[in-house]
Image 1 (cartoon, rainbow over the protein chains, first blue to last red):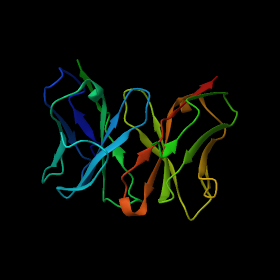
Image 2: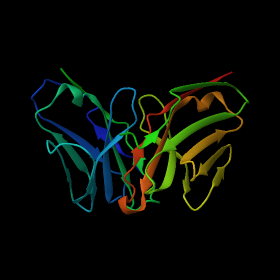
Image 3: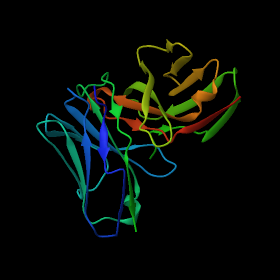
Image 4: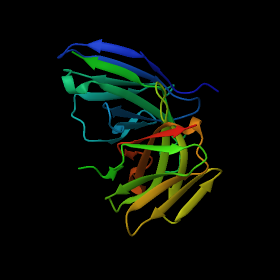
Length: 114
Length: 113
């Protein structure tokens, strides 16, 4: 069974650019959540997709958007990058979207915005 | 507005002793609590959880205690081992929010041999 994978591992962008981060869920998982972890802080919930539909969203502006594909892989897109977007971006997949379903995290993508 | 707080950024204990990590929350809607462990260059991994209908859950060396009236939970690791050295995150979810998690800021645990 393959775990959650993310690509790329590291990325450097400049302010104003756009970025796409990718996540491949664990086999059979239909729910994916994205989190932003700034340096020295805990992960912050960005949004969740369940069966290709956005299922919930945290306190992030609309320039953070996502997609979930029929094979349940996922993308996080960030437009008009700002310096404060520099962070580790984590995706997590789970079998279903209810509370008791364990989330399995990928290793993250480290984004640096210059 | 931090709904989940871990007030100790770091904790150092001797191998074999007890490690106690604390977490406070403010949102009364939270009804499920989890602890995650994170090593460098890896994603967080699930450690143990507790539902709000319980006040204690135990799994091997790990025990989580929940005090709903104080909105406080703690993770006890006994005995602590050097391999337990990692960053520990407390997280919470509300029943109406599925498994969308609110995390605390983390506590770095160092277990000295």
